[in-house]
Image 1 (cartoon, rainbow, N blue to C red):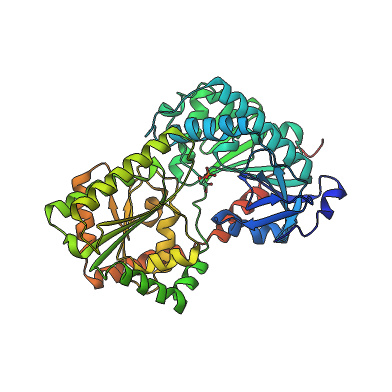
Image 2 (tube, rainbow, N blue to C red; image 1 turned 45 degrees about the vertical axis):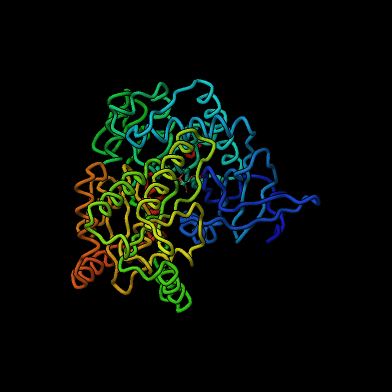
Length: 486
Ligand code: F6P
């Protein structure tokens, strides 16, 4: 698709009543020799959640293109104004790969991998957050709403409030917020908390994340707290109040339900099973190749089950989709080597000509193919060591209107808080326990499967992502507005 005209950009700044600020734009784009933008919608739940509200509310989206040094004026795509923020190669290394994904990511995921603390990365994080804040300040209308997303941009709410005290500012953290005992390792912990407290509403996936945040505020700052509300301005009765609350995110449930009912997708699911050699049991894992996802633990448990002969290796297959992610970060490179070594070993041991114990796919797939894989899978394995929510679990449920399939779900996902008792819950660190649960899933009686899936669908189908964004924005805009005098 090409640029539908950057006419609005010439009208000056401050036009948009709703501004979304996220690390990435919802499109991948390039600029041709003629200066024209060519863009492609990138997959992802956030854009489907926000597109209708953006279109209704005259919205702009501020984000990075995903490539180094790519600059362009704001341009319109799918009825949204997209405002690119440019990052240099060095900023990508320090702000994105470094501080966001080698400091905050492991720290916020229970230090599964050791976080690295580097002052230069922090400086880049601050500088880039300031650039995002300035870009948002330039787009938001007077008294408008700005919704900032995720751990890459935790300083933006305060920076933005300093620039534009008239705005209503929301922040949503898509990943876990760690217990203060871990969070306090961060040398810049107080600046991060003050950054987030620039928002009026700070949203989290789980109640536990919101209380971790409030505990950190209580322990590490002087701001008084009462329940989930933090008072700024030292308790002055007229002072600003910040509220922390849980808003568990969902997916575009109807889309996955529709896709999985589509006869072409169903035919593709049958074809997938046939291509796999029509095994009795197809297990499936779908993850970004990330050490938080427990892929190694899952493969280890699966290998031991085959070794023990508790599941017939000849008639069972595990399909593991591991989409490439953050490939310049050392911990991700090590993980890839480790996982690929495990897969090779397992296939060497249990594979036959025409049959692999595990099909490892280091790619991303479009939603149609994902829906077919979900339909083809008897058992879905979600074994994260820590996960803010885990939307794959919800996609699997939304795709199973046939009430087939069993979801094995880690206790350490936000989804487990919401979905229990429908899934079979596991502690992925407990390999023996996980083996028993996977075997039980593979042998589950169809009546029990239907009962569980019906319960899961009752929960997931009523809770889609459009409802999530409406509910967050509803609470944000209903909060008393204090300072409209700039
Ligand atoms: O919240 C986690 C998250 O940042 C998502 O927003 C995103 O889809 C995923 O991780 C992948 O992130 P990245 O932008 O680093 O590829």
